Length: 309
Image 1 (cartoon, rainbow, N blue to C red):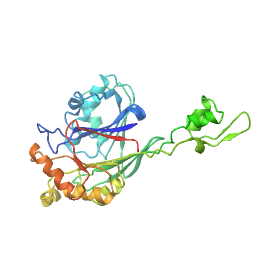
Image 2: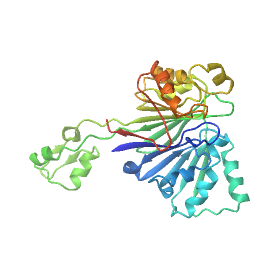
Image 3: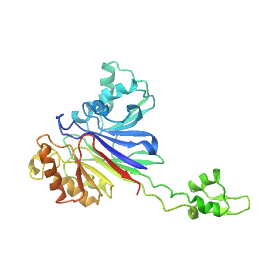
Image 4: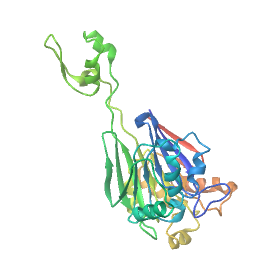
């Protein structure tokens, strides 16, 4: 199975011709038939129109902070989902204030949603967990409360060794399913099947870290520890460290330093200022690679696929 990260908007501050404002889709179609969205800047639903993503598949929306370039597309997206076959519940997570923002936007526009909407105002810690995934949030260093998210896929049982089971005289059926789920099974002849003997190596879950806007900070490193993918803003080039600090943002070198200290496997730079045109993007990547060689840069509609380990 593949975890697929799809960038809908990768620019900073305001829409530009080459980069829309921030939104990232985590496609979990094989895992749970769903899409998780991280931020919804202006025109996010327009960006989705150019992709195979179906708004009715959106299950959760995680907002990093309440600056306009990360939330102005949210009311429109929630509204349109009603007209696009969306009937299942949507949960929105975000900092204090997100509940009022959504309520006022929808109530004043007299928008009626045809599906249940749950809004959760987060603090630091584990904000979601089920049998498949765990999501942790931590406060970053920005001008207003801004959070990063660590999405942890839980380890999966190993592949069922069906041929070995058949050799042991176990026929396909419900017993196979129980063994696959790690349950010990007692056969009619009195033998007990130990599932560990009939499962391949455990499949390690993947970790994706998606950060909101931030200066360089320790919480960013903590969220990114051993991540398979770290998505980190790099609003400014390495030479603009003072500017980045004054505006509560990060440079390419700072993003790369987080990835290096966290032992992340892949760094993807995003939230790129429009001051850098297409010709300068490779320079930004090269700067980051001076510190962390396995660095890429996001572009609108770029996909990064993380296969099972």
